[in-house]
Length: 313
Ligand code: UDP
Ligand code: MG
Image 1 (cartoon, rainbow, N blue to C red):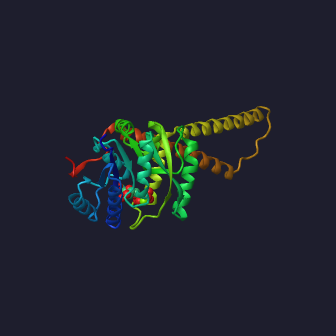
Image 2: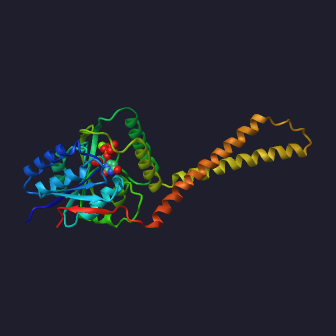
Image 3: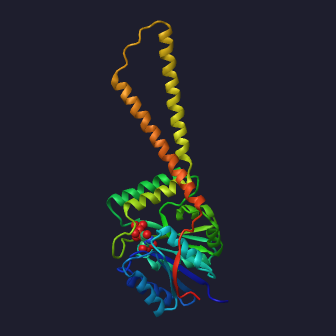
């Protein structure tokens, strides 16, 4: 039997500080597991710090490494997709971050679970070394996300996972532009197995995904997988309209009975007008989130553009 072909798909954006260490640790794993035909596809997501040059040099040094250079920074999800779509002829793919927050030493366990029959193997964080606001944000998101969406999305999973051939081709068929990888992974289904690991701080450098990007990512997760915000707005509308109706009837009846209506205070009016105006604006904003997504989808632009390929046949 020929050895199984496993490809790692690793997006990298301005990661010169961690790449040498990443290469060293990946090579060690590849060498220790010669019964697997390894390859590593690194996607240079329009880096500006020489990440591309480091990747090309590594591809020339070691034939197991490949590089896809995108024409600009398309963002993590697009880079990941580029890797998944371009890695043809492999039996399984492991997706992971370049910054060594996903320890490569877990990869053999993922591969082992796959060889025992799992179709999707998820690396599940036992712990997270992040602190402060970021940590709070992550916890809040993971706690609420599962309740908002109608999918069994595994908690404490990120990018780090293994997909078998069938799961990869399911992924390649998804046409949407707004991608939330953990959500889509839950959506495609397949039997899954979990492997626990400890999530590290990034080995070096700064997180390329700043807080704003993570919020956008969280929005993508919620708005692409749930219609609950719209339903909630409808409920708010129904509630406020019923209140308005009841209050209206109350005052009309009093008026008809000839009961003098006390002067309604300025404060009440201002509060009502501002509150209702605010609710309506939030409503328009939520509608806009959905509409904007529809707009992006109908444009049908490709999610990324490949400028350079190194190491592919
Ligand atoms: N990344 C990317 N394109 C971007 C931003 C990030 O390919 O526009 C890569 C980055 O190099 C890293 C991974 O995505 O390998 C995760 O990024 P980061 O560590 O900044 O995110 P976090 O760990 O905070 O989610
Ligand atoms: Mg990171």
